[in-house]
Image 1 (cartoon, rainbow, N blue to C red):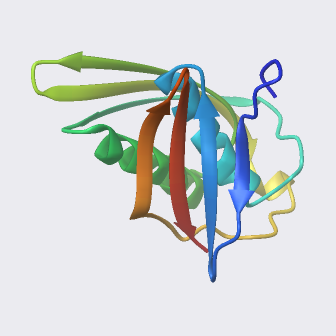
Image 2 (image 1 turned 90 degrees about the vertical axis):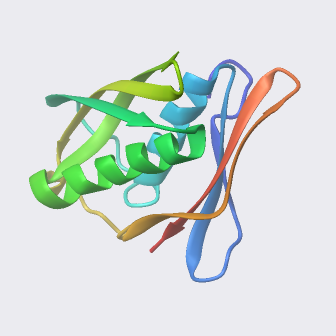
Length: 142
């Protein structure tokens, strides 16, 4: 938890996993959405052995979030990269939104994964600011 603020919570959903990720900033909410996505697969503490960078561009924040989470799953599938921590920076230039992420993690084969996330969905995806808190809702296909 960040201070007394919840970072994310899981919600009941049939056949899939639905969660809310929170942040005082939109970047922090993106970070917590990434962590929640990987928390679904393993509750173990993942070491920070490997470092990678991600750069993405999209036309809106939902597309950017979708691309970001899908890129993390792609790295898991292709390089066995399992996320431990992440630092996200968001920027806007003209009509485009940009995401830069510095990600740390380890080889998934060193850990016991209990659920496999197949994909991120746009179904019921929401990104909104409630008072002073950003809230992201995501449904993962498992």
